[in-house]
Image 1 (spheres, one colour):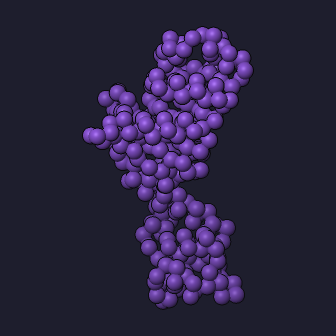
Image 2: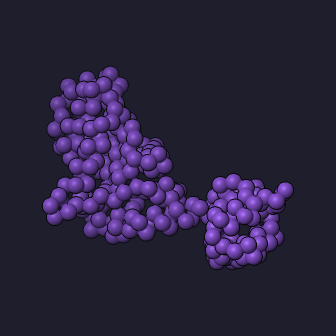
Image 3: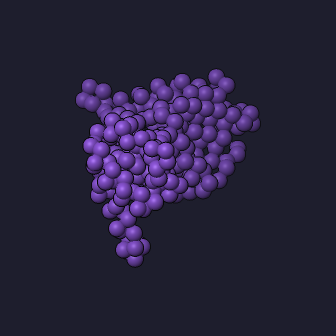
Length: 267
């Protein structure tokens, strides 16, 4: 990686060392523009923009046609990556309280690269007057969903009741649980009840080997995630909540990753 870095470090600096070049690329990502429109869009002088344009043209990232500037195919890819970087750094800063001092091992590396998907998500924290706020927000969203996917190494009786209510109301529940949590489920829910829904196909169970440090729930239009502290205890005080499509996709990617490593359970 260090050898690769040495080969591309000047190109990396080219993209991020100049506000002008970066803003031009981002602006043109959303459509071709003439100089007057660019000046209005990025709030810089014509001379400053033209200088940046010249540098971008030298790298074959943009081209000019009939007075309008557009991204080349290479520029399209570069702008995409630049926007991804901006969104990812923004999300990393915004959700520092969730990621810092928490175990992130359950989030695969290829999915953390898409951290920008969380741009418009929210962090819900417990307060002195509402210590259950993160769980209550998650519960409210789950109660309104007809289709629930849940990946967890945490057991909660109230959450289990929501699963049963969803099934009773004609919904679907897919659970990917660690062995200990699955055993807890069997203790709390009568076997005949689970058999009923498993036979109907509206309930599906998968067992995960090992201890996956996460509690993740996705529904029809939401995603909720909680993590374990680095001391090994599940952190009830903070949760990531989103009803944005990109965040729901991000959460489902984590769920699907662990589903591939789970074994389907049948009674």
